[in-house]
Image (cartoon, rainbow, N blue to C red):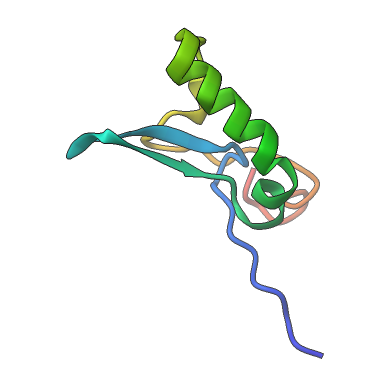
Length: 79
């Protein structure tokens, strides 16, 4: 058996925002399986943001992240 690498943000939230160096580019990340599972819904939310100026949750913004507590971090000292 081989391990499965999982990427994730410290607070377990999606990452969505304009590239600070090129505002015409939108950066979006969903973190491995979480992003794969919710990718279509995240894409719809980003499209609504672009078309209708619907705000995305502030927790999706680019920038510093504070580790959150979840079942993945319970007991690990990370949250």
